[in-house]
Length: 486
Image (tube, rainbow, N blue to C red; front, side, top):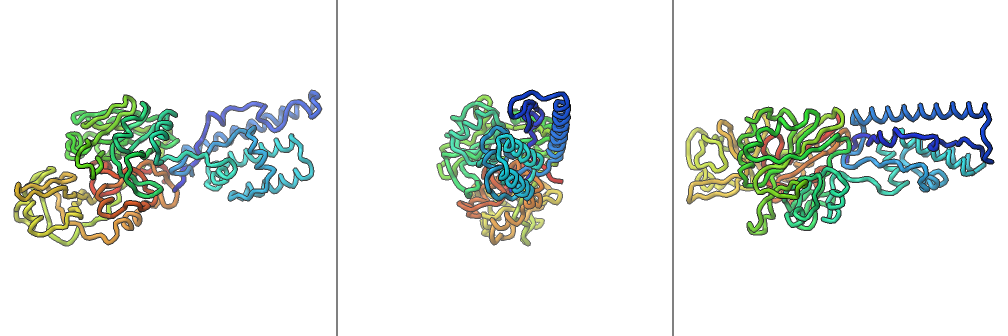
């Protein structure tokens, strides 16, 4: 878990009335203040207003810089001063992580021991609340707020039941959902997109479920999130549509024309890789014998597509550092160099060390381990191509991702421990709390061959999928998008 700054609530911070002050315009006996007392009271009001406005500006500035909010949680809002739990906080004997809070409560405790009146307690509440409000961006303060007021944080990456997901949709949040078609198809209309897969990385461990869905909420510092539906012929403008200060999350169905066209054509799209684009290829339960069809969902209409793409375009409220990354545990081995004369998903021929031969025959005769992909170098980036099926009688090989002509591929070197390889490549920003995880997904092949069932995947949570999108289509990789940091 990492941190990413306060969830600045300008709407609540900006509202202020004299009733919020720890003092009132009448004395204890209810007498009206005299002229000199009124002047002093008015001065205190203006000073308090000035301090409050300064705090608002400071919190807004911290939020705009992306300082400190927790990455997979929304920072807890401070309850109003009228909340009775504040009384328990200032009169109790709790010990907290935030040092300044402990020191302030110690002084307040000594003062209240001499004279504990409702007015003194109210003033103490305002003082403590102001301290926590000024420092709400600190992880220690968020921890202490959870102790004081209960677990009121809303997680941004959550495994939910259908009922919980429906409630989240009804709240008006912008969501990205992954789950079985039987769950996604009965969710209410709302601001969400979704794709089918029963395989999920969660904080409980990696699992397969047809009853629950994984819910990713857009970060709290988002100005807006728009949903668009594309066809294979219109998807080429997806980069043009991504907002300048934001990113896109795309879902396409497995084996659809849209997936095929995107995989081969994305590098030629106008504006390719000029704006952050991540996502995944929706699939089905590999054990159901092909009785289901991969689908993507447009939550606004509740409709689903077997072909097409749904994209959520996210506009950030301020300039934030957005980074797209991949984690690939595989590297090229020392074996044969393979070059494919034609790009495509089902190659027949391949050039091996300069000699042309049938690809299916090459794989069978050389007893190639199909649990490991072939790895190509795309401008220095490693991109895997997994083998889906080998039909030697037809001289045909089916792939999970297309090969490209002019790229040299080699069979991947063995990986002793796939999960350890993934966890050893956690980006520094996530490890040290300088950024927020906005999205991640992992490949089904990693789940299968790495035996990830029931295992924890560190900071990475999200769907396990049948193709990963990081600007273009990837295979047998983990993809992530972070926001914030430097």
